Image 1: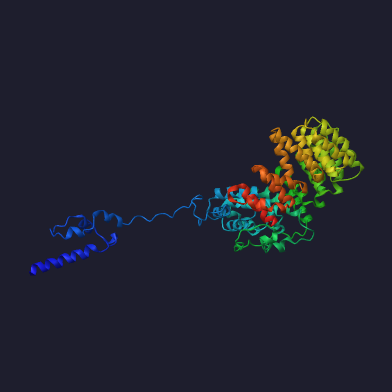
Image 2: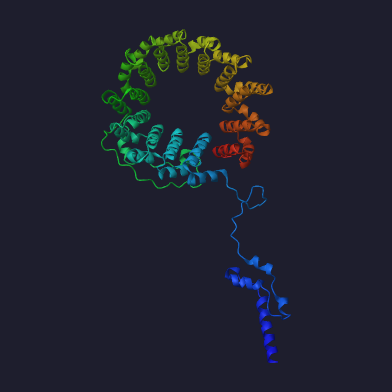
Length: 553
């Protein structure tokens, strides 16, 4: 009896143990798992009824944690949030390689967008990577965009720690934005006569000097680089986070350079460098070009001397003539007129083109006479000078050249000059060139462009008519050319065409329609523009978002 009672208790114990939920398999040893799958040796009839089947065991063995699910665009998940194009670009700037960032910068250049400027400034201030810095300096300099002055000055001051490409890009940037406080730093770098930087320094001084008003104190300004203007004050679109990153330590003020108070002082510095430093032939030419960019009469005596010297290299004489034209001071006129008679055809043609900024009967006579020159570049120069002077007396000469010159480049310059003069005789002639369908596409397109620049309201309807005719005849180059010039025109007459393109045009037509909306502020087409902001439209989406932002649609 006692043995039976013990057996019953043992069976109850087994029942209770195997009826419970299996423990976490991580706490089981191999022997424990094996004991579950082994047959029970006790012959009691109760035990088989309560055993857990062996296949249950694998279900509780832990598997590796699954990776987060990737939600596809067509998954149907209403809560799925896919990265936008702007978000992807932001990630590229923050985490991308130099190649990826350089590719993105080129894309931003093509789109002419400033939405990521703040992030690019942050990157530039915290890297010495030559490719990234060169790309960012170029992107900002091309748009005359402030924000990197401190980083550029630092690159110059710490040039031994920077790549050559970085310093060259910094100099180009400071010149392009015409940052006057950089003058003493650039002059000190020139004084060091480091050949690798001389040309870039000269170019930068020329660009900056041309923007300096008389009395500008560049040294005082250089000691504390100006604050970067908020993006909204500059009229540019910014990313959501517009907070400016902390400035890196400013470079020390340039101490050894004399204070420069005017463009004339910069010109005198360049002249001294030309005369006293033996800068080499190519750098001499760069100095001559820079003196023209500075536009100070202080440079005229040296330029006149070079232009009049028949023993001087032709390329330097030509550069001096171009610089005298930029300055436009009458002190250089005699040298230009003398060079019009030069035996060297290249010097002669350059001199004729340099007559444009000057005035007077003697100038007009020299320009008209140049149309007879057998050297085609001189005839081109005559057309350019007539364009600059808006010389009505030249219209008969220009008409003749536009129709009958045997060099296409001369015809082009004649048509441009007629468009610049823009009197009724010129416009009537241009209209005849445009409407004559036997003329070359190039002639027709350039004539149409000049007409639209003069009076888009009058000539747009005719250009649209020729656009549709070109499409009907599958004249693709001509059709695309008309699209281009209509896309840049400013007239309310384009509104219906833009609406038509939005409704039934292809990608190219819609892109030009966006140009028309932006150039003419067609707010009545806001709905069509906003529709294209959907990411599915790719490049049109990015362009339409720019239009929406700029017009506040």
